[in-house]
Length: 292
Image (cartoon, rainbow, N blue to C red; front, side, top):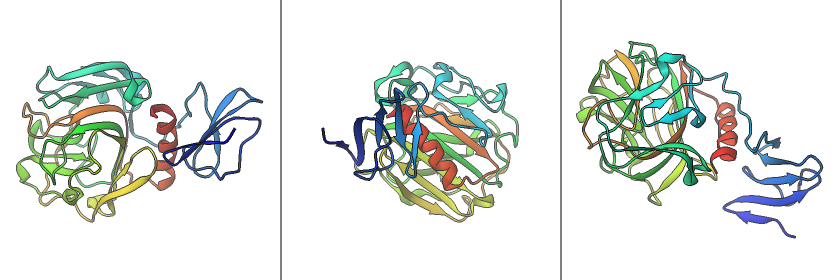
């Protein structure tokens, strides 16, 4: 039987050893009949899955929220970062749903919002715990966005660096760009614009940058490959420094003008580090085996 081609990946079916022809692509897979175990190609070699999912070493993260730890619409426990990093209910409420086996996310857990005012915030809200306003940082978010709410050149509140319990000066990142409340402090990824080919858009969002916003990148993996959405060389103008929390789905506010509509299933965060392509690709291989 010939291999099956699916959106750039190859399913080789049952094989007694790792196939080499046709040349495997990242995300390709096969069932090893000698070991009774599934393998996935990571772009450079074959990786054996454990219980159906590639095991990822998240030791390089400073904070990590796996889908397995989502318990309800107001409880998402951090696997790394301490109890203070647990996500709890933020401002607003009523528009979020919890799914224990989301068919859109590979049967994994997810939280989903429609156009509303619901968000989650870290339990601890203390200055500099998550970001000091100037240091390097990176984040990868497994997500499925269903609509755009902030206009064509502004990002919604998918992942937010919150500050001082206020919306003013808080900074959100999304696949369509970034956003600071009321544009008071400018944007640096605004040219990413609207997402094409449209919604729903399932993938992995990557934001990474060195200190003071240098070498900043907003990138997107659509399940097949990475593409760069936009870059930056500095932070938004006059951005405050008293950041004290991480918010998801919205600023810490009941406004629905900048909320994120869609699902989030997993977040890996790196305080103080602009991650390498190697770290990016390690998480990508794991996420593809788990959520696709």
